[in-house]
Length: 460
Image (cartoon, rainbow, N blue to C red; front, side):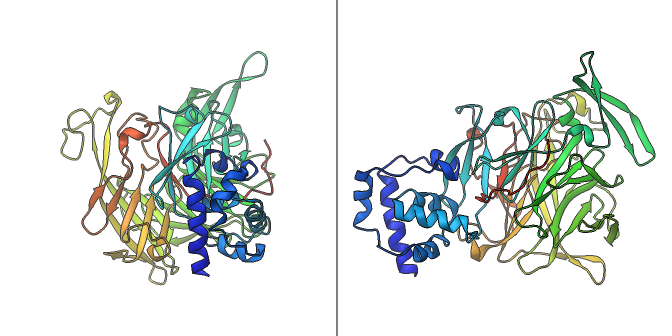
């Protein structure tokens, strides 16, 4: 089988070397894969094995998405195998995460996708509204969560081009619309309360300003209870949790203010970690969604970024990420107090240390570990992932692939981004893509390509 795969890849490579190097049209969506002309078919005929569709499907199932899309464009037989593989739900190949960013040299609706597996950049035309006008709030399972210029949220799959509107922002408990004489929303009132505690006066914000203050991080999790369905979880001011399912017309608040930093979803249970490393669990399969404390706070609140994830062997992992913060002059740890943050227009954040902890569920405590060994981390304001390096040969074991965390991103939109491959053994960093390639805003984000289309939609 592997020798057939090698033969197949030679054919695909020869075909695409003879055509355009860009996968723009193929990556716009399954329906936009173009068939090659007769002369291109002739180019690959000497390499292409005449195999039944079912065997071609077995081979195609081994490929990551870029090679799969190339395969579907070679000839009618291969396109039939490609289509059958997807329509029967037989394509489950794990995908190497990619870095999604925008470039000033491209149109406002074009995103760049840097593929780590190929060391190659693809350009994708995304659906309206233009990606450059949106905030990227999160990324998980192949979906971006974006906030438009009215601070409304949308899910976008940059590979398929699918876009889904999420429930109105005014259904989040802290947000109230302010209407003009015609009954249209002209501003938002953002209340700063949690439960019965009001900790500051409400803020009046323009439509495009609410997203600066409200959103922290968003996630799209597959709903195991319903095939093709999903749950969207949102961390928002004041670091609370809300969620929505397909068909929901509003956001449902999960818990009072607890300074949540990150989430993961396993078997119908949402696990959320706070800035003090308390781990809460919410069973989203029941009617009440009550909170259960899995582990109490283990540290005083400080300004590390906290992430929660699961290793391929099933261990629960907490990750602390410490950053140096510098502006004009030094506003890091040694800077004179008080630092006047409101006067700083640009900052530079650099990761200086990452500490790993295995969660001992029986003892309810954290156990520090000094290495990930054959695992790889992806950290940022995308979903936190811990992958087995053996399954992803293009990735470096015991390294963390970093983009910015959610905190402070909107406050300094033009700052130098903390994007690198971080060696967990030496606490040293190396470049991924040269910084001059991307725009600082919207901030680059990790995304794992996904060709699956959602079977249901959330109500607008």
